[in-house]
Length: 344
Image: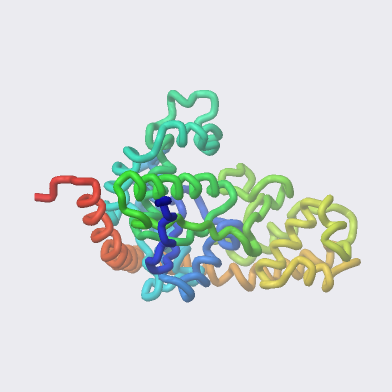
C-alpha cells in the first residue's frame, strides 16, 4: 500500500495583506498594493490590516504609532477599500495573530529563518543588536496569513521568500499534527501593472519612503501642485520616447515614467508608447502630471478629511477587528485543541 498525497485544500478562497505604519505612503504603495486591494475586495473575501505588531520590530515612538496606524487606515479608505466589504483592522486589535505566531515559532526551524535575506539586509553587520522580533518577523507574517486560512496574498517580490516560509510552516504543522490540509499553502499575487515603481530621481532604485529626497516619490498626501511639480522635476534623458519596449529597456527613467502612466491610465506600456512615440518629455510630462493629479489628488483630499476625524477611523478599525476575530478566534480555538493545550 502506498501513501497517497493529501487532497487539495477545500476551504474558501480568502485574500490577506497588510502595510506597516511607518512613514508616508507613496505612489509605489498605491499602484503596487492599495489599488489592487480595492479591486480584490469585490472578487474575494478580503482582510487588510495595519501591521503595528511588525512595526515595533524596530523602535517606534509610542506617541506616534497610533497616529501612523490611523494614517494607513485613512489611506486604505481613501483609495477605495470599503469597510462594509473588506475587513480593515489593526493587527494589534486581533490578538490571535500573536498567539498563533508562538505556536509557529515552535514549528518553524532555525535553519529556515537563517536563510531569510531580509533579516540579513535589515540587520546589517550588527545582527546581534537586532531584536528577536525582527528575526522572527516572517513567522508572525505566517500567522497573519494562516489565522484566516488565507489562500492568496498580494506581495512584492521582496516578500516572496517569506510567503514560501509560510507555505513551509503550514505544511509542517499539517504534517506534524496529523491534520492534512488544515492550513492552506497560500499563493502569491504579484503580477500586474505597478508592481515595481521606481524613484523619480533614479530609475534604478525602487521608490521608497526612506529616500532622503522628497522629490524621489509622490506621497499620497501631496496636493495637486506638489504632484505636478514632482513630475516636472522627475529625472529623464534628452531623447524622445521610442516606439518599442525593447528600445525603452536601456532608459530606466523613461521606462519608469511610461510604466507610471500605464498603471495610472490602466493601459499597457505598449499602448502608452503607441500614443507618445517620437514625442519628447516636454509633451509627455505635462500629460503624466495631469493624469497623476486626476488620479491621486482626490486620494490626498480624502485622507486629509479622514485624518481630521480620527473617531471615524477608530470606528472602522474596531468594526474591522470584530469581523476579523469572527474568523481568527475559531481558528485559534481549533489550533489549541490540535496542539493539545489545556482549555479549562
